[in-house]
Image (tube, rainbow, N blue to C red):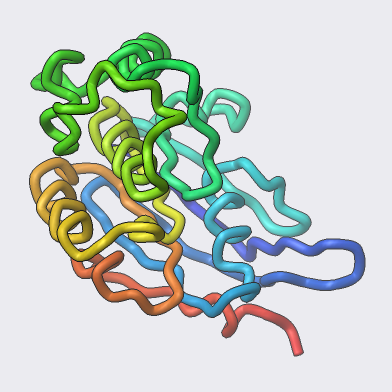
Length: 209
């Protein structure tokens, strides 16, 4: 069992609070969406949960099978998918997958050879990523995040740049690979992004007036 526990968490930039007094517990198998419009702070909240944006107030704790995990070590248990996440574009798709999974091992049933087919880009396996469209790159990000053997996954507006066919692929990939993991999604009301989530956090409710 993996667990992330937030207690009265807050984040501010200079004198402006992005959110404050956010308390929540996320456990293995849970799926939660953080909802908010553009500029609402939902992405910042998500990064804070995963330790990539240090809190200004409150506490965050990580546990695996009842044992505390240092915040400096927590990243090993996470994978991230966001449209602003840079890829090594000089590498081919197959080379990129090999490099990524050397750092974060793939799920046991995933092989490097299978990866391009699983993200529906088999014909582009030997093509440098710099020649991919924005939608193809987003597919790669989703695939790398979902198919890494981690305990929690962070999706920031995952259907950005995806057409309808690719959104359907995202939905089926979530259903196949979500397994018993924590999944957190930041979304601006695109229901395809969080159709599987059973909990919702409206981040603007935690912004002090």
